[in-house]
Image (tube, rainbow, N blue to C red; front, side, top):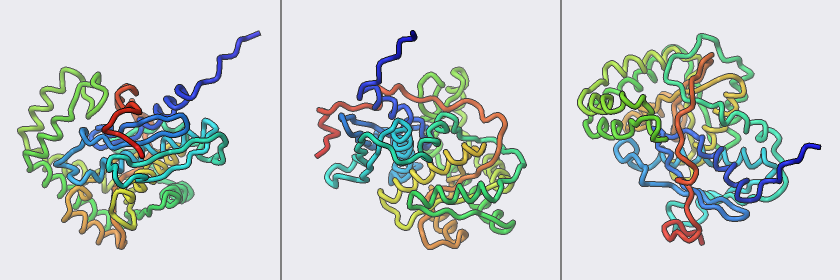
Length: 332
């Protein structure tokens, strides 16, 4: 008779949930999250030591990234047979506490459980997609995924609208690359893969890439490449929210990650063209192009790719855990 392994204790089970959470995407792969575990709860904190003050001065994208991690945590909990009751911004006196997830036996989300298998298969693509079109039924699933998390999505459709949005992307590239401060911040997050975070490069290439990025304005070339990606992607869409505060950003992140997991289940991957969202003047113009009264938060392209490549590196779980007696991350 084969001896069965003992069931995972609460600590091991919680760590399995966190392993799913930290696979979420984040700007420059900064992984700006921390977690504190209790027997029946997980607390999610923003790690603002990993912020991008030039690229993301209001921590908007940082909070969106944490929202992505939160959605992964919820999905993994459902797959583990747990009910996850999530409360956003539970303590107004603790700014860094973004969410508390209370866990209890019993799951009522079969659909979410099915998504858990896609967490490890999701990738961020920077190359061009195949030319295959996204079927209407798949598009409906993607839009529903966003709406299920309290956000909205607008498909960028038609040649004129695509051209206008693509031009905003390339204009954003030019503005960002012209800034030495922005280039310096980007270079700081170019790391050898063994570091476990940042924009991973082969070990010998990282120092050279950092020097080039810090000193050379490549906005024209990067802008032309991104303009072509925006023009030619099978699907280009924006995700937005009714408001523009921390809770809205958390909802946008959860909507993004749910969309990404649903997309992955259909064989799709995604890449980001968020330059217009990172510059206030361009964000307003993008809002006008989308024809929506709400606040656009993300611009992404989706499509098919037979070889999505390897996942971006992640830091060890122990580096994102904070102790219950850590005074910097108290909960009340």
